[in-house]
Length: 194
Image (cartoon, rainbow, N blue to C red; front, side, top):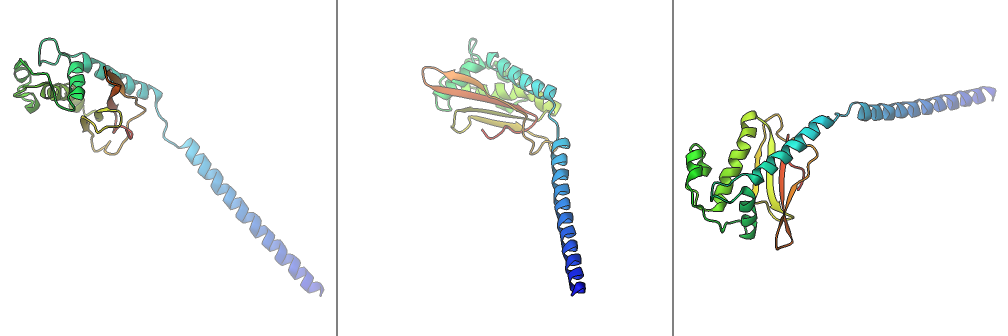
């Protein structure tokens, strides 16, 4: 009888020790997971994020103020607003062949007769230096939840599926309607779901 009691106590002690070991292993795995997530996650560089946002805003702002080359007094902003009001087309007719002379190698700049084609030419020329530098970008122009008027991207293999850092659209109200044109230029990768 004493032997059975000793054996039961020994079994019970072994079971308790195994239980404690399992709990310790589980706690160790949890601690390792937390440490790996907290300490080894990729750190976002706030300076790089700021530079990308400012570069994006500067390019869009300059783009909107740039003369269109379509007529003497129309800017790219005028052409964008006209495109939205015309439902993706254009009501502005170009009087100048200046763009085909200035950009003879760009096929989008040849035979421009309306504002939409001048817009295509201007946007492609403004974004060309980013392509030449190998800077990945995603450029989208759309009205709120509608399909985009422009959806251009230049992504290298290195940034193939990368998402851009924090970005907000440049907004342009379309008067007298309540529509708002959103212009996105996401540097470093694709724009987030927009």
